[in-house]
Length: 364
Image (tube, rainbow, N blue to C red; front, top):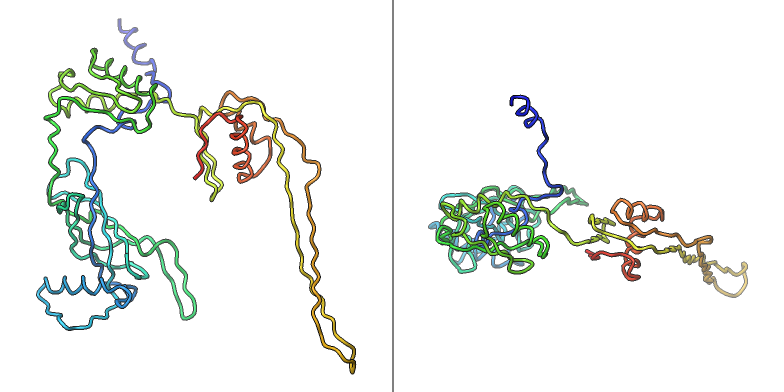
């Protein structure tokens, strides 16, 4: 008996290859964040704020804030360079409670050059219903650097946008009673019938009875009552860590700006021949000056001379790309062409047009 127990402890635990937690595959209906937005003022800038002639709304906002603080500025012409109007955005996480803190993003909307070193004055944040759910205030951490001298300046990053970690305090809660739900929908982030069916079977297997039903490729209905859990939260906590292997679409994503190519594991190629040649066009301007002899009549003129040529690379032949049944074979076949990443993007486009690339082709 002891020997059998030791063997059981030494046996490795088998985990399904490519299995992903359910919480990383679906969104739970009602468990979501809410976007907040506000309009505020950043002060304390080192002469990099809004030009009030170009941004009159900044002056108006500053006057309103000073008047609320008991400072009479009626009839005064304010021309400071250390203030800037900003839009403040944040996301209120689900089940946030009064007094909790959330991160905020601050972005200039005037002609301010930088928000470095600025402080956001108390700014209410509203949701889509017009109600105030949080109030933001704090020092802005801008994401750029500005260096300048008498005749030149250099900017790295975006100094007109920044963040305030934990910069907003929750003042109102979202009314959502999770415990009152008797059913819940699970929305797949990547809709797929096969994945939805696997999730349905995995949940029913976890509870030993039918509690989940696939409605379509992107939705699964969960019967909270049939789970016999103590509450809706207990039911979600039990299923969110279930491992499911998703069935992803074959997809090739390319970024033409950076030359990045990303391929999924299910990408396949049919047998095809590829020829890729280089055509070079050269135009050279070598103007000549025609000058008359001394004491001769005439004038100096410039005679244009243009040389144009077209070079077509010789010896370019067809290269065969074999049929591929795995991602490693696809990569090996394409690498055998010996072209640059940007040329590879053009080849992939042509392969898709020829019907030899069996995957969704996404260009960004």
